Image 1: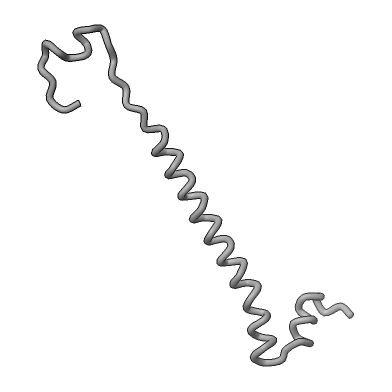
Image 2: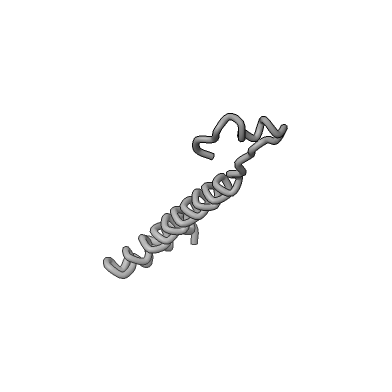
Length: 73
């Protein structure tokens, strides 16, 4: 409210001033959630691209299949 003269202060009229900043917490939570999800998706993309890059670069199809099936046929 800034500077208010004592004679006009809300307490003189038995009133109360409340500032609602709940939206700030909601926005902060949403931004944090979006940032975390973006990081999760980037990490998942990295894990998906590494085997593909190895296959493309070195033609390790047999090695990748062996690792993914844990040596089973």
